[in-house]
Every structure is written in C-alpha cells, then in structure tokens.
Amino acid sequence: MRPELIDDVSQSALDPAGVGATQIVDLFHWMVGGGVVIWLIVVGLSVYSIVVPGGHRPRLTKTLVIGGGAVVPTVVLSSLLCYALAMLPELHRPPPSDSPTVKVNGVRWWWRVQYQTDDGRTIETANEIRLPVDEAVEFKLTSEDVIHSFWIPSLGGKVDMIPGRETRLKLYPTRVGKFRGVCAEYCGTAHAQMRFDVTVMPRPEFNRWLSNQSSDAREPSQQSAIRGGELFRRKGCGACHTIRGTDARGRVGPDLTHLASRSSLGAATKPNNTENLRHWITHTHHVKPGVTMPAFQALDEREVDAIVAYLEQLH
Ligand code: CUA
Image 1: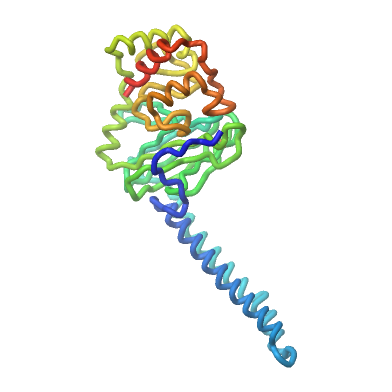
Image 2: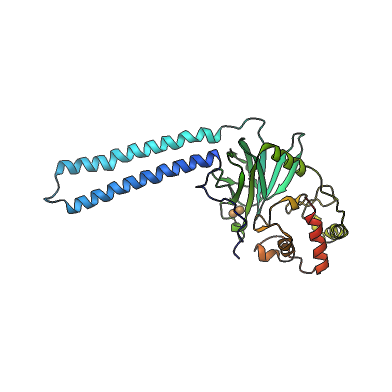
C-alpha cells in the first residue's frame, strides 16, 4: 500500500534547514560541479583525439596522459578529501552542555523518543521530534531490534541505530518548519512506513510543548471519552501502550499520553484525524503491513467511537 503524503513537509537533502545539511549540500554541489567540468574536459579531449588532423604528437600525448591521468586526479581528489574532512570537526564537536538531548530508539517500525526535563525526569513520546531553532541538539540513538538508520534529510546526515550500542548525532536546525525524518536502512516489511515528524520551533514554543508533554494524561470529561477510557483498559490496550497517569504502562507500542497533540499516526503514515484513527484501530495491517498491533475488528462501531473519543482528548 502506498503511504499517503502528509501536507507540505520537507523531505529533501537539497532543501537544507540545518548546519549539517547545508555542509552536505555544499559538498554535493562542489562534487557535482567538479564532476561536470571533468566530464566536459574528457569528452572534449575524446572528440579532439578523434577529429585531430595529421595524427598525434607523442610529447603532447605523454603530457596529457601523465597530467590528466595522474596529476589532475591527485590534486582534485586530495582537495575534495581535505574539504570534506574539514567539515567533520564541526559535525562531531560535542554540543554545549545546556542543549537538549533527545534519545531515540528505533523499533520495528516506529520511533521511541525520550526527552530529559529540567527537573531530571525522562518523558516519552513517539514518532515526533520537536527541536528549538538555532540551538545544537544531540541525539543518542539505539535500536530495540534490528539495525535502523536515523535520518532527517533537511537537517543533516544519517546515522545507524545499532542494537546494544549507542550512536550519537549532533544537529543544528537553522530554520523553523516541519520536516520529515525517515528510516534509511532496510529493516523489514514496513521499512518504508517508518517515518517521523520533526518540528523546529522558537525556544518559548518548544518549552511550552515540552512542559505539556511532561504532564500526565488529561482525565476524560465527556461521557463517550470516559467510556472510551474504560474500554481502553478492558480491551487490554494498556498491555502494550503507556498513558501516564493511568494504569496503562505497556512498553511494547508507542506511548499515547499526548497522542492527540501529534500531527500523524502510524509513524507518520497518516495525518492524525478522526477517520484515520478509527481506520488505524480497526485495520492496522491495511495501514502498515507487518505491524505488531492487531486490528481490533471485533469492536462494534460505538466502542470504536468511544475509544477514538478518549484518544482524541489526550492533548
Ligand atoms: Cu527501520 Cu528501515
């Protein structure tokens, strides 16, 4: 099934919105530009060698072979190597100690995201990362099952997520906006549907978001949502999902404490709206083949309505 495109989210390494991505684009342009120039010279010489009248002068031929075959590649490749190596210290220097650290675990086929609050608590969300603009941020990456690869093309390079090891990535977003993150290492059936949303926002807005995320789940007040909360417990959803402030403490699937505040469902497969949420609960495998969550097709219409009402007030 083809994933539905979600609004105008940028997913292009050629549309940089961060320091790392800008460096990568610059390097790309130099390489492409250099490659085109060399290609033109080679084609020009080939044409010349075919059409040159009166045979080739041995001295000129020798100069061309040594110059074009040894000197030029050595100079060009060495310069490119130095240019690329000069970028590494900037990409790998540790960020300032007060910059946010985000832990991301790759799971087939979604992303467990953890933030550290100022008072030292760890709060968890899923498939969505928010970052303050113009600040360095360090990602600590690992995997809970197979090798995944964490990549936000508009912000920087990709880094593998390896089970049992922690890899690190520093990003420095320079533009406010919404960007798409993807898994860049084939990891199984739903690899192409393992995506996430990245929102870069001004610091005050980020602080408000983080403070909301660190609170426990909202108590339902409307009748249908209250019934939905009970059904959520009765049907055993809490065995896999956590909703902080309730007795749902499962660790298998994504934390749903603030599900309604997220812009997408099913690891950025579908926009987060009522219709898609209903469809997700009852037809998980249609949305994401291979997903671990069973489709709850045995629920009747009113039960689905109630559970959706409950989940939709988890802002
Ligand atoms: Cu995870 Cu591909």
